[in-house]
Length: 492
Length: 136
Image (cartoon, rainbow over all chains, first blue to last red):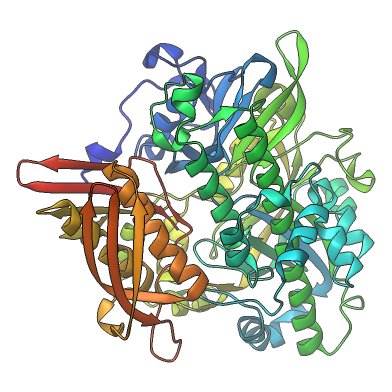
């Protein structure tokens, strides 16, 4: 493995300070930018911000036809492909606005869900090692690991149309599970018939599998409560054990994105688009290509909700096996499930009026404020729950949608800590060390299918999630509710 | 020759070769090294023929690697040797390897896709070179 030079990777363009938690890349930076770039960050992150090509990608997204207000990025920003990770872009379909599969990413509806329990730290500590060992034995995780349930193409098409309610019909989800999932686990207007046979073949045995990369299942404890009222509404209190699940639409979703990029190869010529990066290829939302992609993407998103639902179901079964009590008796209720790679048509205030815009969130989480009609009744008074996984050594966070998210970020906040070390650099940094033992000494039981899984995902590969969350809190995008500490994790 | 280069979230692959067919074969080796680590653990026990239509070297590379990746994802086929012929209508290739067997093979990475970000294939004075980023 080799390094490219730091200068090749770094961003040397303008970053103008807007306020204590936001920087601007002015539209004048590059001919072709239709709006400014705005990056939520502060002086603690500015060095890391310049260290890779992510700000250049923020500028590139500002080229997309129909983009509204600004090309945005959250403080967990880092170099992705096409869009940066942490990127947000809203386009106006009525003004020729486009949808870009690269603005969603290959892992359509990658997201997280948090499950609470009635267990305390004292309950879990004596059985933590056998519990984590049982999880990695029973729950498919890692490269090449098929799932415990195989769906026929016909079943998959119904699953992609109906989402989590389909699993409820098969006894694999409850009414509360459905109610506590974004969009109640089913995004409307999905078109499963547009999902290719290859995507179905990749997805038929992967619903209910974690995958690899940065995906994981983690047992956590509520370490600190910052907002007691919101925490109470979410059923969280200090010392309470939770489980965080991070995965997406697996091979099915990756293939839907790949198929769309192939179908859009001629779109720039057909629609007269000038794009600075091939991965930003797009089509007007109101075009045959745009409607096709959105229909297939929604189908893949519903598959992803079902994937996380089946993972949660398996987690409940593992807890039942180890603790010898039904999961209901262990209080294992879903707190919330939220997507962080998706494009949605949403109504937002733009300028002096309101518009239906296509909001792309690529490594960014919807964060609607209290009172929004899309929040489940039980949470409407506190704001939409936002779940922010950090790294496997330090912390994760629960927040709720903030008072300024609608005006500043199309109702969006960050999605994680964000990487600060490349995978190759993290692997180098792991040489001669035993990450599993290091984590164990700090009180975290880590189990992984591969050496690469722990080396590349070690805590130092990530920014400090406390800093990232502090910025979105101060910016009013989402507000802190509770901090959670990892206790045990399974990874690919 | 091929080498993995730094990318914050994913992995980059830089490939050089004397000819376009050699470049495509070399890139395929790089792809399976990312998936499986050491190619020496894969035995050439079965072969598969691939035909890709097209003339743009960028899309030939993308589609060729995409087909190989799909063969791993759907049929769990790991390849280690590649013979590639490029002609006016596209490419024809034979890949040799064997099905993934957890008792024999270790895997290193799950590749989600071969991205088009910064994807580049070009002829140089000394041959051909390609740069691509895979989504991990």
